[in-house]
Length: 489
View 1 (cartoon, helix red, strand yellow):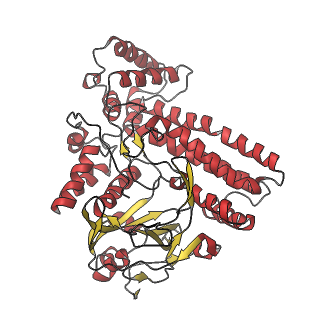
View 2 (cartoon, one colour):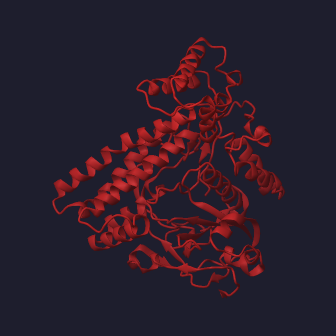
View 3 (cartoon, one colour):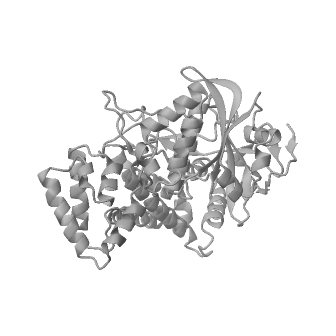
């Protein structure tokens, strides 16, 4: 395996590789037989300082496939742990390798990770590979989330490997190049807390502070500040998920990023008809990670994070626990404030009144009762076309609609300003589950990527509200079976 010498624009550092060796295993990707570039994120590549033309060359594709190592890279698999559906276990990058950290033209530091690049010491019997469908799925959803204004890992490229992977059937293999602020997880801290030393925990915490929270002063309470800042970011992130109807599907602690990014798009999906009990994941039998449970699970995960920091919070364990509990207790109100502000914006409300919350809850209650589409209902309200919702014609909606209009009239802002606020807060479209499946089926089974390419174009500007997006707001045909997603990424 040779070093890539083409002028791709790689500017890699390896700060994670300078952490304690127990946190990772140095390892090169396993070469593949016949890599082919399927999709490349041109805008992202350019913003990262990479040469798009050279990434599309034979040598560039070999880098994206793991057959060549870019200059300056020190590939490694990260170790971490996690509570999976509430059960603690040892984990790690079972099929992913961190190539290094790109220093962008703006001086920012981002991780480059190959997902599906072969076995690692953490593969736990897996083949270390990934199938094309799930990798394209992560590309579509993560880029849609970015366009929606939600913090997320990004997708740079997907290449096929020329090899098959066996899941339920033989499927074409693929590798995703993922970009992230970092791949530090709650599970990373759990791993060190369980199997490392306090000194290693302090090194990891200091590294996290330097990388993600450089403005936190090096004072005695910096580890409490770390906990508080992670809580703030997660409260904002989960609120944004709820505001667009996104369901992660597998909110294990190893899938919660310290940076506050959405990470690991496995059985994720977007809700059509509003129902807090909505679950798409085929393995979430009990509904642990249902849409309505996501804020509670986030708080639970953050409590596990707080537990790992106890030795750093205070030398007295009782005082450390009290500090941690007080910090965690702030999450619910932080989340509520973020969610309430977002819902006000979705309804064109600038100011704050006590009765706003009941106005919002009454609308959601009606939407649940009549199985109103979440996205399209707010879209119809945005353009004052209530007749486009299934709520129209019901007595309770007529009463609610009148109260909403009176509420808007009490504002000093003009009606045109309220509508613009709603346009900026209510997407015209989301990655509808049936449209994503259609795009993936065309790509994987027919080798036709045009359906996916068209979908990506309209998803890239969800708040544009253009005529071209109208077809992508159409609901799926009724089905006797609920939509199900599977852990494939």
